[in-house]
Amino acid sequence: MRHRARQAGFTFMEIVVSLAIIAVLTSICLPLAEVSVQRKKEDDLRIGLRQIRGALDAYRRHSTRARSSAKQAIPVIRNPCVRWSTASTMRRAPAAASSISSGDWRGIRSP
Image 1 (cartoon, rainbow, N blue to C red):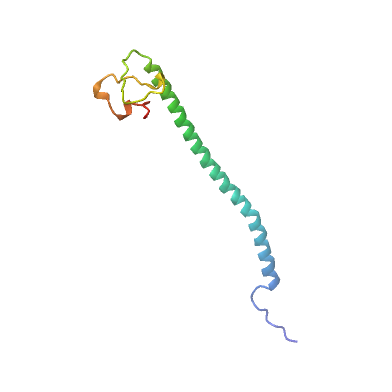
Image 2: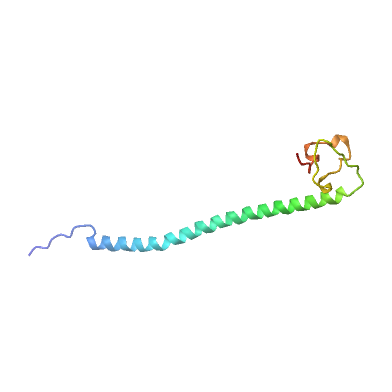
């Protein structure tokens, strides 16, 4: 009897088992990857919310200082062309005429 020379390569069963193992590992890794992507999005949202919270706190601090400084005895400029809803919306005039800019006239509401 002659012995046949063994051919190099993989059998069909070896390939099927290898593909099954790869499929199982992939099915384990995909949900973990989705969770990590979701956590990254949530972290980005948290950072955005912290920035918004910081901006709101800065605005609140600024508006509180502006209200407390508005109680000083500086004459009020009244413009007859502007309708005032309440006395609390009127702002005081700037201390010097050179400091007048578009940002100094906050609180004026258009009719």
